[in-house]
Image (cartoon, rainbow, N blue to C red):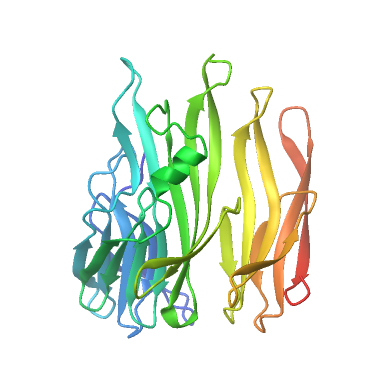
Amino acid sequence: GIPRDYELYRFDLDSGQLTAVTSLPPSFTPWEMQRLSSGKQLAIYGIPTDPNNLIEDTPHVLLIDLAAGNIAADIPLEGVTAGQFRVQAAAENEPLYRMVRPGLAWDLERDLLYVMHAEEEKVTVVDLVKAEVSRQTDIRVQQTLLDRFLSLGVQVAEAKVVHGTDKQALLGPGGKILYIVGLHREMVPAKDGDGWVYQEMPLGFQVIAAEKLTEVQRLDLPVTDLALSSDGQWLLLRSAYDTTGPDGRLERVHHGLYLVDTTSLTVTAHLMPEREVYLQGFSPDGRHAYVSTATSEWLGDHYGNWHGTLHVLDLQSG
């Protein structure tokens, strides 16, 4: 049931005409795409995926020549793990799966793609002009990702069902700083020893120097999403994840919003609305951020009567 044979299309805004630019490789599933600074090529990051939604190969970046309508280059990202794959089963007829999503940060001024490895303190840098991997290196950090997993109590070797790690990455103005958040999903033994429980654990907020690829700051905040203001001065970090409560039922946890000044890399405000908040964007002048909350009612067999509220956050005052 996994879609196959993707194509790239061009839609003309003036005439309303839709035309096919080129076909992508049969098993290639696109995840993100960006136009290069020249405007003549399009970079598409994706993963060869089989009909069972399992990865067939490492991620690739395709460079599309928009004028010629063909694939100008195919860049395999060797050493990068992404997508869903099967791991060794703990018992007969018990397949295990891991879903991994690296963090992608596009430097469109310099035509670079930074791929932050999800389960390693490692980064792969793709030169989109030369159509090659220019760097793949470990990030020099004070605490490894494995150390962080263990400090959170995650039994990484004993997981039972679908698990994995997601990362998100943003590039700061000038291409000098990378901002990263992550979320680890795992099944761990129940405290009473009876069965397993599901946990999601934020991995904190990490700041990387893009040129040296070294860690310059890490804040142990329970955040899972991030957004950067248009002027690059403010970061808005959101917290929302699932965990198993004391009664054994899955529950949603949120810790509100954290406002970070990128100059000092300090939290200037922590807002705790009653409900989970969603990041919607920033005003063009960089003065305000927009977030939303939602309410609903239980109608017997499903939630309905949804109502959304848009909130305006003053970034200077917090």
